[in-house]
Image 1 (cartoon, rainbow, N blue to C red):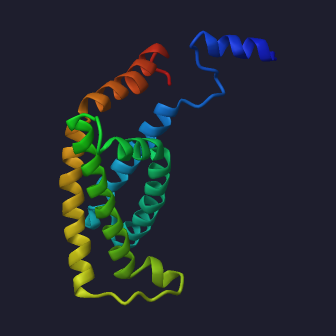
Image 2 (image 1 turned 180 degrees about the vertical axis):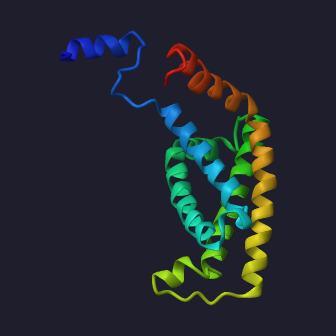
Length: 176
């Protein structure tokens, strides 16, 4: 059993405590999971409508977790937006805002045109041709903005992937 002093020593030495979660790994895992789920959920012929709708709800919950995990970045960047910050940070911020608006539109319109998930819990959404159009247009919008967002952040993604996945896997001898 570790004493308080040894725990402090481990933290002072820069090593991570085995019980302390790696924040970057957690952020990366949530981001990668949301991205993978989005890729699956946009392919309705692959999933079928029921799975499409339920995974859409899962993505909505994941987006809340994502936003909460990145809340400090949002607050800090919002404050810096009108002062000294890099062009990349400004572009990234605008992309994130656009993606957020797109996802809100996807989720809201998706719920309003739901044919399976909401009726299953006893709610009959109104559905409307405009909502279907908004849903599909928002998906296209989010795909484009996410592609640009990935390109702008590619160095971080590659570095995090290398550090958090590939190097860990190699250090563990390929067994993790």
